[in-house]
Image (cartoon, rainbow, N blue to C red; front, side, top):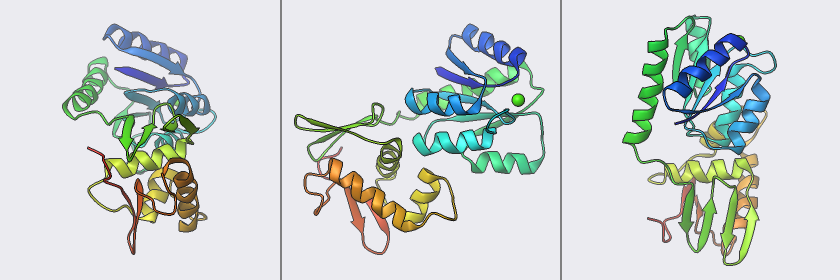
Amino acid sequence: MRILIVEDEPTLREGLRDLLLAAGHEVVVSELGQPAVELGTRETFDLVVLDLMLPDIDGVEVCRRLRRARPTLPVLMLTARSSEDDKVAGLRAGADDYLTKPFSVRELLARVEAFGRRAGASPTEPELIEVDGCTLDLGRLTARRGSQEVALTPREAGILRWLHRHRARAVTRAELLERIWGSSAELQTRTVDMTIANLRQKIERDPAEPRIVRTVTGAGYAWGDAGDG
Ligand code: CA
């Protein structure tokens, strides 16, 4: 697996890196939260090992920001605290699992291996999606129709990924706000509509008659089924 370690404490950071390298993983480290968000958004990882307490932005916020760009990126949160509140906050922000310091080497490796098994057991989500004559490359943040290629924002790619992942059903505006923007009271559902209107201009054959991001009256949005396997 390709693993991003976010930990400000040098001894633990280097220890984790050496351990995971030794276990055969490819490892990238970050000592601060903001660079980790940028790395995790720009590059592809199979797992993020994320410390809760960081000097710039805390792990919960790092997790929230990463999830906006990459809703399915697995996150293992590390914390020195063990109160239920911290766990709830971390898991709400999208962490998949939790490990309280101090933890044993064996415990950490077992958790990391569990993520690897999960990734191997379930088919990985496609980063390249062909739909209605449009090629969406969600890893590179591009959409190509014929010879014309346009850039997608991380948020647009996040919306497409989320809709495609849940293509069996309609997705509400509130759900998109929570999962792609992170729950923010000041944001309104109109924000979703405006973002999707822009996205349609980029990817739809005819934005007035969208076939990739369909409107579901009274519900929200759904992935179009035109030509998608
Ligand atoms: Ca720390």
